[in-house]
Image 1 (cartoon, rainbow, N blue to C red):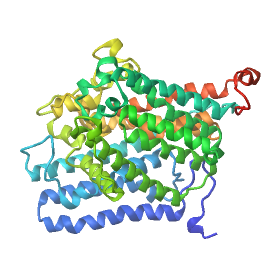
Image 2 (spheres, rainbow, N blue to C red):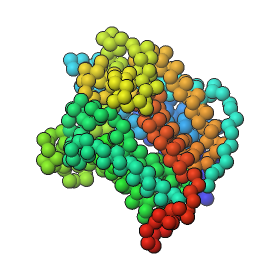
Image 3 (cartoon, helix red, strand yellow):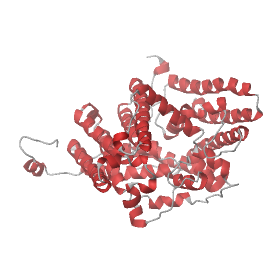
Image 4 (cartoon, helix red, strand yellow):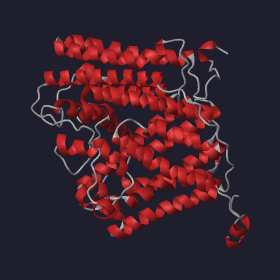
Length: 488
């Protein structure tokens, strides 16, 4: 085998081949090289400062790949953060900013382009500081010996997954009953947040309707071969449909598919690049198409009036435009850096106070402490009827300035070290695998991500327990009609 493509089985995180290391470094160098001529052509010292900060950020992302003695793993928490957050953020639109500069920001009307470019430079420097703090926290974190858990034997995976998807259906049924019809539920994203069903009865029914997607993920962790079973895909598609209809979340619909791919890859230690390319195209089509549907509901008075562009190419273009806007003119992080602390004071931990109230419905408690996304919308954007993600760096800075970025990301690095140790000791355990994958994709150091992580990992734990509970098969067989024989 060509040594460039040889994957050494020395880590449960799937070793990075020399070719993969070279490709990632090549991508970062190419991004730096392509944007340089545009920066020089601008003939503006502020664009040069922006480019310098951007280079510093790229160097911080590349650092582990430049150290040849570092054993890299694709799913190692630090490396995965670099790829999933860092490189993906560059591809989604951050890499365009050094080349074009930032001419406009939705929350900063009246700010001239030159000042916006200095703001972007400050943002890239803080991103670089965050990545270095992440490395530091991981290196100085405690070396704990993790317990090795006994691998349980599941029972009735298909049947129990179907039951959980059925329970999830009850959430949508409740929303349909409260909202007076399915059409009204589908129109929820097109009306103001204070007029939605969740604003009057709480978000517990939306939450219940969304937990069904967790069950196929846990099933696949127990039984990776389930991906070849039609019943698995039928239940998965039903659960994804339930989640989107009830919540309108595009990320919540696409991300479970990516996580399923991660679990399969971790089990078989194979990186299916053809499937990854296909998955990327599918994800862009879904994000763009579902975004078109959501935008159409905002323009229509009734669901019958909703009209969606049917061209998948247009869906991909719409998805890319949406992702790029989030890095530039719609970036919550840039808005925070511009207005804090001169116009808006520091939070001093206020946004993090919302974390203990994650599982308390508004209908029960009333006005709960607002998380970072809601605070950003209210105090920075002055749009109280929505939530705008502040980004991990933006929220840390808003709470405790530059020191907050260092502290929050160093603490996050320490937590990732513990997560890596836990998975290293229990890489064959399906429950630990599910927890590990949810942590990789959801557990970033800001309140929206923490909300998403806990909202998914808690039902995952309950579903995991239900999968390993023993059920007397004779009772089920007596209850089953005719020739039906459920999987035991």
